[in-house]
Image 1 (cartoon, helix red, strand yellow):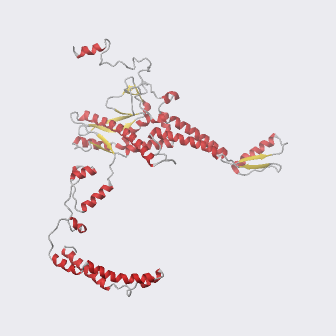
Image 2 (tube, rainbow, N blue to C red):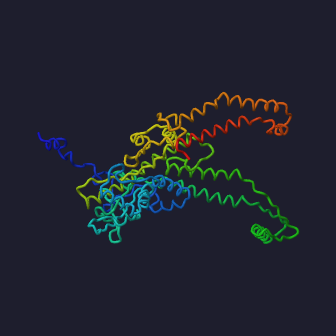
Image 3 (cartoon, helix red, strand yellow):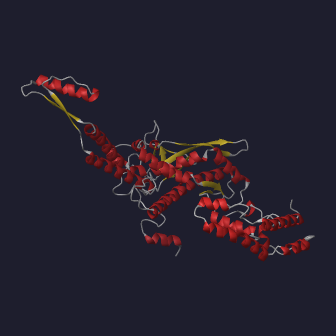
Length: 487
């Protein structure tokens, strides 16, 4: 029995190679002119398009969080075929990305994390070498595009409201966690829409509250028999007084100033706004401590929150890498179809372990010799990045003489060592003891610091014999230096 018969036997009506569950055959799916509806719940309930999310970026906290998330990826280094040899085509692609303003391209791709997807139109141009390469890549507004029943990107035009399929290799499409049910991608701004809305309402009421209770109340009193016209006149005077602090009232009327005391009520609005900011931070960054330290944070908690943020950065980095690698694939399909396609990769700059470097410096100065393999393993260098110099000569590091192999004595060395014998350690200690002992006895008899200073004179400090010994030692050191060739 052949494989084809086995496939048909699995189902008498459909074969195993056919797609059965499709949108066109689904019970609860409806589309208009082959346009896939945007499943975003917020947009459907508001009856608006994606442009309402762009207004959310006017909120300072939303903008700060989105920029913080972007900066985590923009701060990374990038390279083509990292750690591998680059041929001339790979080097040409690397130079091309630099000319295209790679930082702007990465930032545009990261907009997909906010709006779900980001179309980028490629303007191709034929070069003098005969290659067809991107001249520029432009991010286009998301509201200009939609998807059909097969999840293909369509561009809506004035002549075709329902959109036309975009040409092959013309648009790069960055999508944030797309699925079969939602090719429009996941939008972080959709998750902060209501938090920003409630925050705006809280700010509005807080401003009204501040205006109402932040200033003292003016209470006007008039005689009981006053007419309605007189009452309105007094009210107008009080209203002017709030602005100008000046009022003229009849002598039988009075004005009282009552201070407002509603500070405890104002905390309700502050807590509401803080809560909404925390929700915004969690939706965009996955945590709060990198943007809101607060009063209850801890070192361990901040490390945990930074680890969560790092996971999001790694996810965004993969989105950028996959999009740019798609661009490189198209460049090679058009120009170098039979060659291996290089890989675009982003990575964090490695920090040098200063403790390890300091230790290795000390060891190398004492005579330890490290191999290339050690530097490659410990510091991440490439083999062609450095060369190991010859051992440092003994003259450059005389203080570590005891770690070096024995050297033949220089001319006159034996005579100098013989001269050192008359300056023995025991003799120098005896001379120092004779000089210091009487001085200590005199200081112990002093009653004040000033009296002790007066005793520290040449008459009491018998140091002449000791000074002569030191002069001899210095003279011998100079002879030793000249013997070693030092000036």
